[in-house]
Image 1 (spheres, helix red, strand yellow):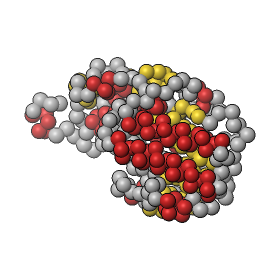
Image 2: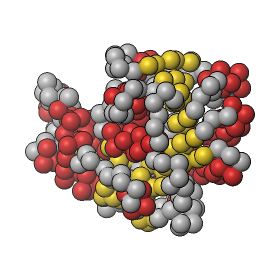
Image 3: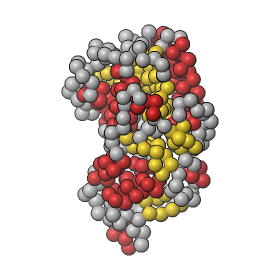
Image 4: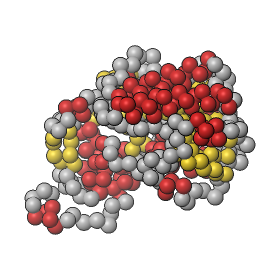
Length: 326
């Protein structure tokens, strides 16, 4: 699909993935860049996502919340495409803030879908999560979802609203993303891959919950952004599927640790039983999306190494060494 001259609204454009996507929309699409309208409530205070944007981009910014109908009407005025990233993000087995998660992830998406239908938007791309399947896998798109925890349940319910809109005339694509990691203009360090890379970067021991054999489907942030661009430019006549898993490597935490140990030899490893819920494995197959031409490009070694390298100026603190912690 040619997006030249189109107006693309990116909700949550100042977040971790959004900060990468709004740059790629300007620099990785052939021809004239589309008009990129960024909508974000800056809940995380990530105003730096708006700094240093590519000169090629045609950007607008609207500060506001997807729960606010007036803001939605303003953001979607004359919009052609909506890429919906705005969400409260939690790990798959996190059980915190169920009401908040439901309000933002589920009902916020429902409000956005209705607003997009009313505004005559052509295409909605919604970023969901492989957490909707529940533990186990690797799952394909036709497998039954058994989401556990408020985050996964809220994303699964939001998917239903988005997919029902397709039958109502709003072309809809849902991407179930793996666990995103890697360097982006705005960073998060709460998920396991980035957290371990941070610990290696500051030369502290890697903390592994459980025995480390649990698996996760990792996806580099640049590959996630490339997947969104791929879905954006997918021809409208290829409508045999609207729902795709998007993951990179399904690897265990121990495999992740081994990659980091090779990048930072001598780093210590500790094991903890702090949270039994972190012992579950999650996995998904991305064969369907790859048949349409998308491939993950960034290896774990390259993605984790890029983060660790950013901490290259640091040396171990003497207090840690004196306490026998390193």
